[in-house]
Length: 148
Image 1 (tube, helix red, strand yellow):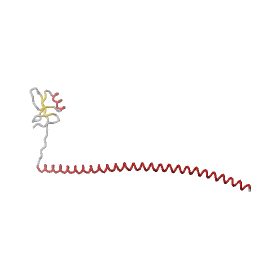
Image 2 (spheres, rainbow, N blue to C red; image 1 turned 60 degrees about the vertical axis):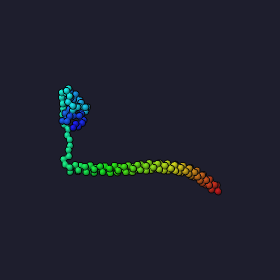
Image 3 (cartoon, rainbow, N blue to C red; image 1 turned 90 degrees about the vertical axis):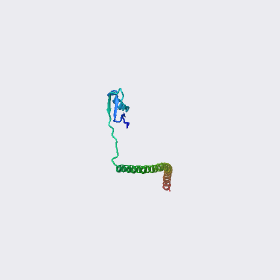
Image 4 (cartoon, helix red, strand yellow; image 1 turned 120 degrees about the vertical axis):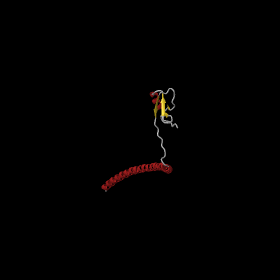
């Protein structure tokens, strides 16, 4: 039976044929070498291929059992990954909402702070004017007391 390889399609014994070694090597590199011997083919190369065969039915059963177990594990892992992706999507939504609420809260706090600073600034101005008024009044009272 002919088994295609990366070199081309050899004959039943693994031989590849060509007009010259240069052409045959080029065909092997391209994967287009042929295993059909023709009248014009003057050279040939053999590519050895190995095939595997099961040594025992017990070994075959063990291999199949391991493959089935691996398939079950893969299925569980894929299911777990899907669950994790759902959790990650929920976390991303939560984080987006948290960032939005934080930015809104920060805006409200910033506005409140600016308003408070404005009130304090106005109160400071009023207190300075009150202080000046009281100092002026005290000076007037001292003058009045000195005249008496």
